[in-house]
Amino acid sequence: MKMRKVKRYKYQKLQMRLAAVFLIPWVIGLILFNLYPIFSTIYYSFTEYNLMKAPDFIGFDNYIEIFHDPIFYQSVYNSFYFVIVGVTLQIGLSVFSAVLLNMKIPGRGFFRTVFYLPSLVPPVASSLIWMWLLNPQYGLVNSFLKLIHLPQPLWLSSSEWSKPAVILMTLWCVGNTIIVYLAGIGNISGEYYEAVELDGGSSWAKFRFITWPMLSDITFFQVINGIIVGFNTFTQSYMVAASSPKSNGTLGGIKNSLMFYAVNIYNESFKYLKFGYSSALAVIMLIGMIVITFVLFKISNSGGNDR
Image 1 (tube, helix red, strand yellow):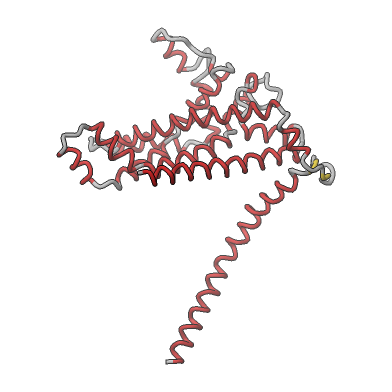
Image 2: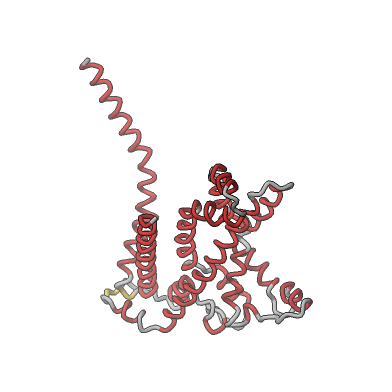
């Protein structure tokens, strides 16, 4: 009996060592590519650093300067605009598309493929396509609006329409979100819908009382993910600036209408070489994302308790 216990102990110890060996590459990657950048960014945020000389510790000066910088508030406003309007429309369009694509109709697999394909297009290529489509003079979108006698906005050439234009670009690539909602709808038991039918409920009643509540966890995840992605929006603004001779290499669009938070960090880092200042911006964004996520979790848990 003792020999059996000794053998079992040795076997478990060997398993633990093997597990540790296989975990070592992941731990190294976590330290080098996650923890080190985070802690180094926090350190640089308290310094004046421009890559030309060693970092000079200046305390909270960068943070004080940030909260007196109007560009910071402009970037926060633009990012929140993108998150509130863009994420709401993305979720609404994704749920609506997923419900339609879940219907048993001929060619359903084909339509699912068509809806998903745009999400495979690289962001740079997608931005170039939409910049051509939204061209105020020659774009297909304004040509269609002119055909049906509607106003033709200047889109990316206008400070009022540039953010809606970027949101329109992102709505084209919601295939991944649609797939997630399709999976969620597929996991809902048909018995719930049968119960609604027996009570004489309509299709709207099925969606309101069964489909939408059962997708709440997925929606919660999509909201958090959308907020993080929204504050990291960069490619569209970069492509607009790169294609415009009037930008002089500065990102942000007309009247800084596309000065998203990530764009502001990029400008401060690689245009003005203020790496300490941009690190402070990154730290503020990190703290902001943690606070927003914590608040959303609290709201979600309180809502679940009420139910």
